[in-house]
Image (tube, rainbow, N blue to C red):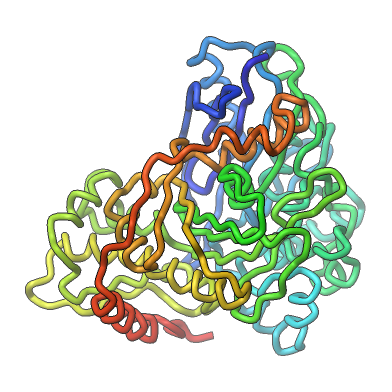
Length: 494
């Protein structure tokens, strides 16, 4: 058995990637699925679309590579985090659409909890900022608003899960209801120090324990799927950002990666000790392997690659996402234009759920190229804000930033990132590190890779972007960004 199958269930698409023993990509299949926006600030997915596209690409990638189940040593799963699914245990049917991590409908619930000073308890136990981003208030909303859901949940008829749990349930025909510690740590119901669901948090959010999955390690055999003709063990699970940290081999304290996907997520490995943030970052479980839990500091940026999709689908100034680099590179600077992509509020380190996107500094000389370049700068400047907070929390000065995700293929964005951070940006040869991390975790569990040192030998640099911007230019851009942020914050009324 020469391959590992990674299922990478993302916010806008489902992918399946086959990896060989050297960590190289053998084949990829990907399919987008519909985004549902019932009201402003609401974002949903149909759980059936999530499952059907993921199952479809898994079958497709095996066919592409001309492989069968007997060729696959294990399956690893990585997933969009916080997105909340509730389904019927007997039929496997969802009780409604999944509420996506970007959804803001529960912002007022969070405000009410803050007024009761419960944000402090939540922060202490979970490492998370009280925000609509996480699963707890989404699950609370479903139990309150779906007819009969609360009573059915109390009777043990319903199951809750983040997307990993939903996939494992379907892969095993409803036999296995689990999650791993990295995903559990994103629900706001999990005590990251004790490593288990927390009774006080369940009470605060009105969640019956009976709906919860069993929390397991990130690298072990959870069960088998027979969907592909013969049994294949499902042996690795990690939330997408933690999987990318593992895939980037950031396994030592102080190592940092940034993933450029729909959102942008920077994680710093802090080792076996959780560091409480003083600068509005999140403390999260990186992974649990055996009896050891590793932790990370995380800065979550809600909108990154999604701003490029907006240029394509909302404004129509590019035909494909790849065109943004050429358009943005056709001008030397943004001509004073700033685009703050706070379409779903601002994440770390600002945590303003009432911020909204803003495009400022427009003149008659502004062109679509300036807007495109401002969009890329807006992604990079958000990352700068997070890194400053991370360095302050950890007292570690970054030596290099390892990058991955779809948008890291954009050379202009990576160069802008190095310039604005004044730190080298390193892109690995295999940029699909989220899927690779899930593959590594699964492979470790079944002995496909011997240990973490065996995995580390496979990581290779594709390109190193060195900073070249003068300090005065960096300072000027940063000052304009601060002004633009000030305009975007608190735009919506609570």
